[in-house]
Length: 398
Image (tube, rainbow, N blue to C red; front, side):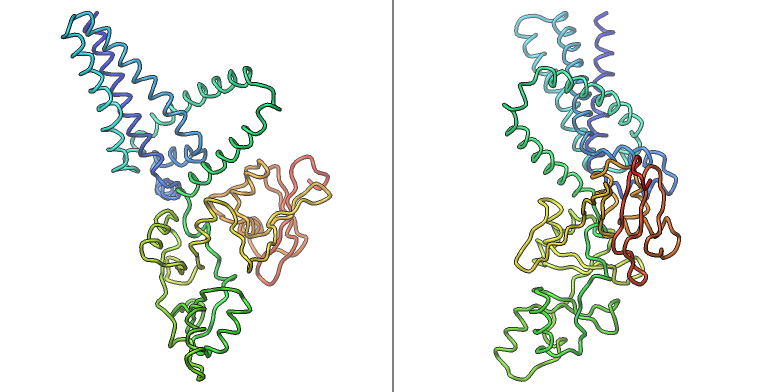
């Protein structure tokens, strides 16, 4: 019986170690990478991509199951040791067992999971899915019990507000770790640039009009970014010389990054290189857009508004019960806001979703049904969708 307990304890410890390694690897696997690998036929990646849709709920569920396994291991080990030893030997054996359980069940597998995130997450995807399913149910039961024993809402209003803000910040951090440059950049069609043959006097007038401190400089076109001009360099040149120069003479080297680069890595690189603006390029080397360090920080803390920003809300509530959204709003943000389930894997923005549903450039007023939602191309300029009306199930226009 004693040795059977030891064998069970060993198996439970191995399960805890595997889950700890899998959990550490899962939270460090970008969902974009998992989706890419899933498209190549990796079944483990497909499971991981599905789990990462609810990234905020992963850690509590895994931690609860892992803690249960470790406690079970400790109890079995303690019972086995106490049956075999007594006195000082028992104390030493218990301490040794505790150290082994912590090392094997927590520290070592966590380090391994961090070193090889995708490989371990994919191989242990089924274990992760099972553990998260069990952990989610247990967490829900605990939360329901807490709700039944909670104080009146009035007494907890300030605490609830703080909790909501904390949850929002945590969610932002988790989503930030999963985002890529393409999802946060200013698209090429919205970029304001200066031609390299402009004079410094002309450039200064435009920079003051736009209110930007840094502007990309183009050669043959937007796909040919040859430099970056700083407002302070323009002011310095105009103050030291009356003769205007070509902008290209004072422009600095641009900083290029792939549009698929994780934003967490880009923020770290921009900080270490002391760069405030980067040009995002697509897989063919063309300009995809630009991203500033302010764009990256806004992903964490929300909008940062300065004296040059014009506040145009991206979402407007309509009197008829629908919402008017900017075509640049991400599909993921719209889903969270409306509780809808619009596809966010093929299209990053609402405008891209409408173009995808239409299969062409839609005309103004054209509507598209998708599941329980209706999207109406409210404003179209040229080949670009600007604003979209969205109605949900139950609305008269649905």
